[in-house]
Length: 253
Image 1 (tube, one colour):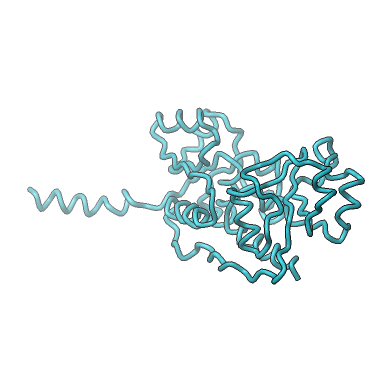
Image 2: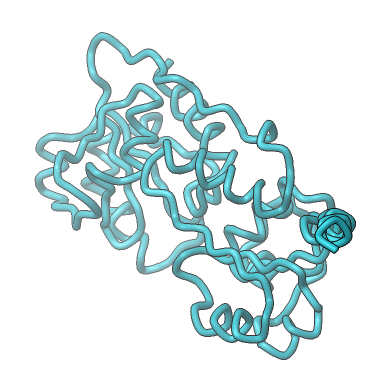
């Protein structure tokens, strides 16, 4: 009898551990990771956010859902992926209905970005060898180059953040020495300007961009020292984080 039971379990094992074939994402970061890593035939739907915040490399061919419990459940997903802070009520209801929901913690360090990618790959039963290789710290100039990471509403990014670690890994010195996200003092910046400013905010004109457009700031830092990178790379961690580090390092030259 015991032998028959073991044989029955062995026969069921492939089905029990089968890779998910109908995967649904509930937020933008999971949309991008699925579009980057997953075979399209295994993606049941992305969230509608990937259409609201489009990036060129994803394209428009992906199926999507409207974020309602009814529509997501009707897709009959065998795996739902969601970030730490997204869709808390929806993911709770899906789990109560027996749907396999995988929650990925948001990385706070570059080391955690690698773990984040690997958790995602494990969830889809994809090879961990697909994980992008994190670059070693790139060479820094002999004279430190201070970079101000400037966001909307006059907010700058200081120490103890993932963005700060990205800047340092690329060879820059963070202009801001305070911790976290800081409201900037225009007069102070004009008196002691950074070597360069990275404008890390959407390109569209808005009241939130007025700080960056102030004439005094424009005069303090020459136009050629206002750097730009692909804004979307700052929105979600992922394999493109390593490409971002390479982009920033090139600006040192």
